[in-house]
Length: 279
Image (cartoon, rainbow, N blue to C red):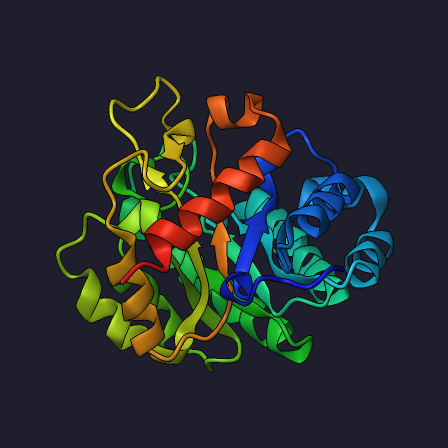
């Protein structure tokens, strides 16, 4: 890999930002752009196998900042047992890729259920089973709180405080949290919770919050600068909390996905320098 601009030394491309690219294409794109890290997703990794993906990344001189995703732990019965087995596989995949960060989207309410408290308890119970398994393999389960609009169908954790409450019974090396600006920028308690998180911060992800939201609110993430979030305070807060890892740009957006991926990376770098690293 060619020399990286030192200002980009902690920048990572989350693979979903360039949705059309395979693992190989995303790795090659990072090399062309001088981006030193990549956050991978399980599905495209599965298409080529963990060992092949790990070799592609290593041969390119990149590092894997995270693997997305584990989680969806709120079901019970047979579905719950299947989820635990799938998360053990995800932990093994993260270890095989050489990343210590498995991002966990914990899941929403099971079909037909209104028992939010019960769903959250099942997440806690599942963590008790999975955390030691992850720790033995050098992987940390990174709980990601999602914006409250996703509570019913994707994540019954909506605030960083809730995620930390679930993480705290476990060793820091086993369970951490994700600070994702899109999901938590609105929370008036977020600064206190980031400081509280300290060395439990396992991943820092950035993208912007757009309005009006699209019909599919999952695609409401925008390139930094296209929405409402003030990024430098978040960067400073995680740094002050002791985080020294990568900053992943993770964008779900139909327009971004339709744009030439190399152009997306060029814009991503510019916005990172101008809007995330700015003081």
